[in-house]
Length: 416
Image (cartoon, rainbow, N blue to C red; front, side):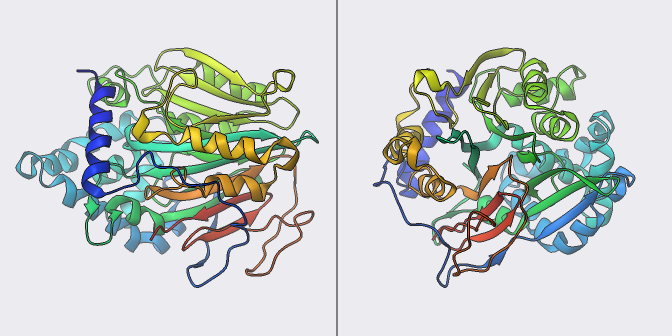
């Protein structure tokens, strides 16, 4: 049986056993903006990461503040893994995974060592935390062009499927443990911003980021038989000619100098795991979904205004194939996008789309909205409505936590 078919069976089982509204779409939400009410929790913390420091020292200040949350997250993973193979899986992680850290690309290997040293978490467990995103993320990303040629890029990051369903709270254990680890990071070199990202404290790869004035980038998992499990196993066995997905996205955010430069590197680099790279630029027509196998690029699906395609939207299924019916976030998201129309698309209305179930779901850890061409910086406090012509306001969902910078927002979602 194909691995993708097994995944579908698991999703169906989880939907039934956890009473999730899998595949059940609600009417398109509107007026979800601005955040307000007792569930609004405040700002996601901003950190500056100095790329001029030795790699092992770069994350020290972050982990010192987030140590308790990181330890709780790792412990939750250990609790889940402890039931496999009579606890031998944890022994394997603690004793064997540290052996591969020196095989990881520089500077990521040294940053991981530094994280372990500061947090006191065993090195193997920090390695595990940094590699399981290759195989376990489910997300929604969209790049949009409005009638004025402005490019917007938005995403929900969903994580934690199959990782500990809590029947009392009706939440996913790992998803809930990840939320307090969400941080905003301003990566600087020579005291100048190189790129900005929303990430998890303790995780050195990048899943969401913006290189100001140049491009925006998100990555979604692509379900495939030849998936991340195979790539990681090959790496452990010594075949190391592929690049870790999240390490590649960070390398691109750090070093690529244009939309085209980023697109070429994302399309041509051999990977450990298949993926969708969703890329937005700073000019009309610059928005695409790059569909990747581990070896090559299957398709580059781009905004094409002449064809009436003013947005490209990706979940976790090839855009030319039907999504799995119990995991169809694409259809309701596209329905809401089309209902809004290109003439009325704004940051607020994009957020409405991402706030509509099942696009928004119990796996959603955060929502990010980005506009690369705007260089304004600001924050606003809710429930005040901020002037979007000057400062992009935070948007909200239940128990949302927000940040606002350079039209790059993160909204941490706590679902009831």
